[in-house]
Image (cartoon, rainbow, N blue to C red; front, side):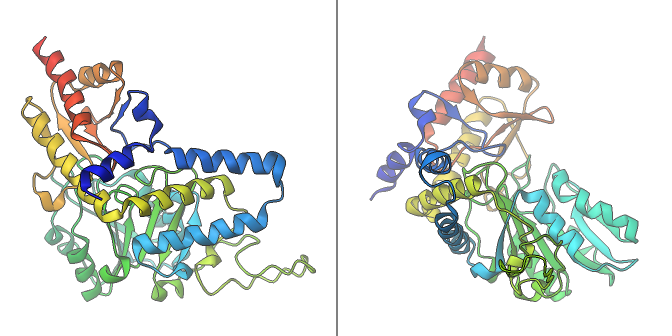
Amino acid sequence: MTDEERLTKARSYFPHIQEGIVYLNHAAIGPYSSPVQKAMNGYINERAIDNIENFPHLLRVIEETLGFIGEIINAPTQNIEFAPNTSYGLNVLAQGLSWNPGDRIIIPACEFPANVYPFLQLRSQGVEVDFVPHNNGTFAVEDIEALITDQTRLLTLSWVQFLSGFRADLASIAALCNSKNILLSVDAIQGLGALEIDVQELGIDFLASGGHKWLLSAQGVGFVYVSDSLLEKLDPMLGWLNGPVDWRNLTKYDMTPYPDARKFRLGTLNGLGITALHASLKLYREMDPSWCERNLLRITRYARQRLESLGLTVYGSPEESHMAGISSFVHPESEALFGELNQHRIYTALRDDKLRFAPGYYASTEDIDRAASVIASYLGG
């Protein structure tokens, strides 16, 4: 199958395209594909009529979904557990480690709040946070290294910055952390589904992501990955599913957790959300993650060239090595352009007075041309 044929096939799965909508806001929330829509409808019908107590079927979907996640990040399923969102996942790390007064955490100063507040809360335990200075949402590995002290225990950062679209050099950063015996945590929500990642090859200790952006799944479902060495150090919050359940003696109250990532499973999982994630990951695998990344970077590059030619300025790094799926543009009339695009059913985002483009892996140059045409017409008028 050629790249052009694959793109045509990918686009056939998204109903909004057939409705004439150009959706360029995956950094906020991704649209449902027809397979996801079908799977969710099937689950709802099952729970309403056909198989109300659908636990055996759901358990198979849960296990298969964990396997899909393991494939796309290259991790054993025993190191992966579902989480309702990225924020919850990062709190698993922040609240699960045993902290000492004087411990230090490094965080880029351009992070989304979800990757800041769980760690600022640790100040009440005497933990200090050091912020990496940034330049338009970008920073260098040397900026991180300059903040490392003997008390630094953790570096937590986004794989892709939510506004500039800056892709961090995880390989160099992970090597630095490993050499200094510092834990590396990655907020991956703006990268997964857009770019490929190998957590074992990179040596990432902890990763958290939601499924509702580039993974094109439902809100309220995501996951955490925890390395073998960190699993032993993280204490879970306790519910009733952190360990094996003795259904014949539920009042035994045995608080012994599982030895693997299942120990972070507090209670009942989001069956509908996991069903959606299962279907979206199945489609992602069918489309081939390497092709998805290649096409998305091609479209991102094209979008930057087209909009810069119209007088918009890219916010962040111009280097392709740091490029992901997000491009934000600076223009005196950004808010007006945002509104004009909406009027033409072209959906982007307005963040910090910047016009943010975030196409999906199924995007085409025609999508960008349509947006550029609206912008050119408005500015020319």
